Length: 497
Image 1 (spheres, rainbow, N blue to C red):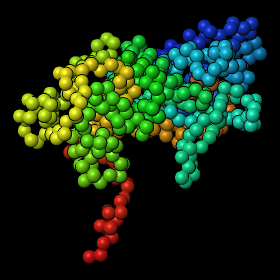
Image 2 (cartoon, one colour):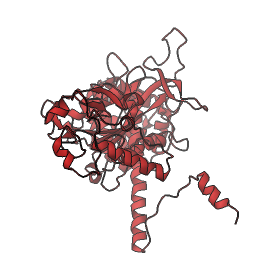
Image 3 (tube, rainbow, N blue to C red):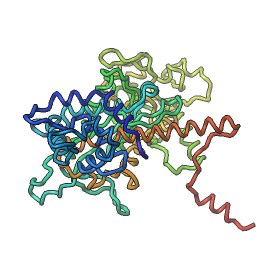
């Protein structure tokens, strides 16, 4: 899919990164023909043409432009000896100056603040104004990006890419959970619709890259928490258990302080009862000490669950919610809040709360109250400190039906990287980029995601026009065709008469 040069230039100008980078470059004795703005345009053009991230491809994309654009962008200049066309050495020189200016003085496997700011501005500029406030929900994920350098030999760190390191990715063989690779982790935050809002184009709004010896979740946190300072409020953060399993101080706490609400899958090690605080702490909530253990051990619903299994699971989740201590205050400035016994809240019947025994019998009843009641059974309310559920607390009760429906939006993050790894277009597998180091890779990925956003917008506009045409013709909107067939459906269609 070809993207007009004017669209890419508009993104670069709206981001304001080109003049900022120009100020960081040294002033040489000789005139530099290739400017930063033209370099970024060439990088985006090469990705729009689905070419690898090679500097030769950048020059090819620039020299293939019409003559008027070449003169305007400085690709073709008048020298003393006559017209001079941009050379590869000039392309390599300008790119080297840019990466040196954006890199850290002492590389540590994480991008510099200048590089991170550049990537943020490029991606934000690639989002049209009508979609900037369409949603505050972000689906986050990370993926592997293999370096072109050969891994160092055993017991050595010497290689062409000293910032790269060994990491784990999903295995490609049958029964293979993971495999080693040598390179980097790329993370992205993709815009998703609000829980009860209309659909929005799944645009990559933030990204970062880190070496595999660094934690990708910790590397993404400062990128996300910096968004409110730019006037972009944080809403739902949709993350898998790889993020939720991190220490609270590394992931959950800084995001909550920035105003985000977490909707995430819990790691198996964090599910179920995990300690007490005058009540049972389970799945990020406090429950009555007499809650049935079968309910506390309720796990997420299987992906291939039958309708009757879904109904039974939702019924158990609703019953578990009746045993949850009810929140009676919001968090104060220190993160403390107060909760009350579920019998006091009128959700269950308990002999320790005589008033609750007058409730109807459709509510669960505690038949054998504790012999030595804890504070939640004796006091009207108890205070919950922020550290009690700092790691596992989230927007919806886990694993309720509301959580399942909200968490289903997270698949947008996987679609972001699937488009970046599509062999039919830009495939960021080994060989896509042959430049070594974190800074060149990060800058190229930012350009790729900015171009990818334009493809998503083009497809979005086409779908909106098609839906409008079908609505005018009195036809229903086009829906996705179900391709998955079950054994039950095959048995029904092939059953003899």
